[in-house]
Structures are given as structure tokens and as C-alpha cells.
Image (cartoon, rainbow, N blue to C red; front, top):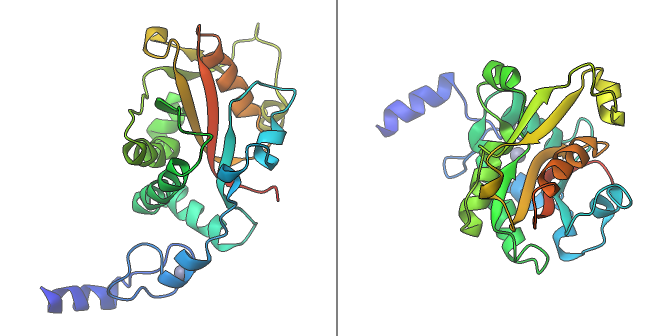
Length: 229
Ligand SMILES: [Zn+2]
């Protein structure tokens, strides 16, 4: 099989999902050099950090963090692009496991009991085949030893009567609303809401406020990447 692997490698070279260099035989998904130089924010070690500040005065969160710094045309951008649009799900799973280990080391995420991924509208999930937040969120949940629930929060297209649009939705020119189904599953729980990249924070503001409408819930947020330094 070694020979067969070598022959396959000639025609389908395995590339690093971040820098696109050829992977060595003992490397998987991301090359060692990229793994060692991933631009981690370490925001999980500081309660008040730039991601948390994004939500001040907008929505009461317990804690918020992002795993990596995201820069346009950088390796993190390529990595997330490969995961989200090229179906390289293993790259997302690997990031989720590493992120989960960091969160376990943080005093601010210790009381989290449930992971909930920010949902896609059903038609978008159908077209893409998966929800990227659910893929890496599942790994975070597994590492933290808690369940991921994908049947609680849903995203629907807003009707004409729902006129209050957030900044993000106006910019996207499509408006979505989030609703909670099965509220009993989250009553009184501390929820970790997970999403891929933070832009304006409007998606989280809308989805967290739906979750906070259920009695006794607390919400913390974890993003894979952030553009803010
Ligand atoms: Zn690399």
C-alpha cells in the first residue's frame, strides 16, 4: 500500500490547507510550520478582549473569544476558505479540536454546558452540504465533554413585518431571524454559541438574543477567527 500511496501522491499531491506547501508523509491537513505559526489570539485568557468589546452595550454575554487572527489573503483566510467552500472538513475539525483544548484551559468557559452552532438557513445548508459551525463546533463539544445541539436554534428568512434590520443584514441585503425550538433543552443552561468569522457581530447579537429569551440561559461566544487586533 505504501507504493500505491506514493503513486496517488504523484497525481494528487497532499497540500497544506493553510500555505499550500506539499505535506510531508507524517503531516496531516496543516503543515508543521503553519501549525507552529498559527496566529492565535489567546483572547480566551482575558475576559475583556476585542471580541468581547464588540458586544458591549449590545447583548449581555458571559464571555467571548476568537481562536485566530484573520487577515485578508493570509494563511488563516486560505485555511477557512478551504474548509468552508472547498469542503475540506478535516481542516475545520482539526481547528475545532485545538480550539476546544484552549477553551478547557480558560477560567471563563468552565461553566459552559452546551454547544450550539449558529445555524445556516436550511436552503444554504442544503446547497453547501454542511454547516461549517456545526463541523468545528462538534469537535469543541467533544473535547470539552459536553453535547452539541443543532435542533434548538433555527434561522429563517424574515417576513415583511419584521422590519428591524441589523447592520449586517442591511449590508447583506437579506434579512434573517433566529428562533428557538425545543426551549426546554436549554432552560437554565450556559450555552457556548459558535460561529466561524466575526464581522460586525450582528448575527451573534440576533441569535444570542433569541437564546437569552429562554428563562435562565447564559450565552458565551467562540469564533474561529477575528479580523480585529
Ligand atoms: Zn503550511
